[in-house]
Structure formats: structure tokens, C-alpha cells
Image (cartoon, rainbow, N blue to C red; front, side):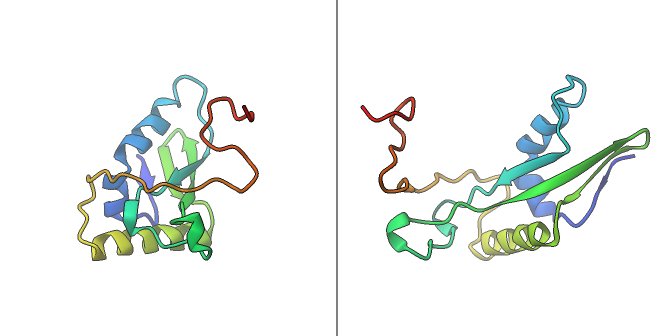
Length: 123
């Protein structure tokens, strides 16, 4: 029997496709027990401390244990659990349904490094 610990239903619904993709890796041997879930927050994401850098791109690591009894999934660290709950609270407070996919805002690259120019090399 599979178990989900310390993860709100809103998060499970919001990132169902990512959970499914992660689970699909189990039979292929590509499965890794740690996975970063990047939050899809669009313009609800908090601003970076330097506003010129745009909005923050936040996420949380989840950990899965595989056993004969099934799969157990939980936040990797307490900070990941806290990030998930804050994310869900921020999204629900903004009235965004769990299944809504938002357009992510532009996030400028690090000064001096090319960003979004194909192979990553300066032209």
C-alpha cells in the first residue's frame, strides 16, 4: 500500500503529472528516490530580493521509499515540507485552483552569462 506523508491534497492534485512521471520511472530502472518539484506559481511567486531578477523560482525535494508494501513519499527535509505548505497557502489564498497551469514570468539570467541562447555559448 502506498503512503503519502506531510503533503497536502492541493499539492498532490497540482503536480499530479509530475508524480505520474516519477512513478513511471520505477519499472524502467530510471527511478531516483529524490526528486525536485519546481513550483508553478506564475505571477503569484514572491519577488526576488533583487527585483531586477524577477520573481523567485521555488520548489521542494520529495523522497520516495520503495518496498514490497508499496511506495512511501514525503518531503525530504523539514524545509521542503515548509516550502510545500507555504506554496499551497499562497496559491489557495490567490484563489488558484489546483489544476490551473500558470504561465511563468520571465526570469532574467545571471549577468555575464548567456541565458536562453541555444547551446549556452556566447555567439
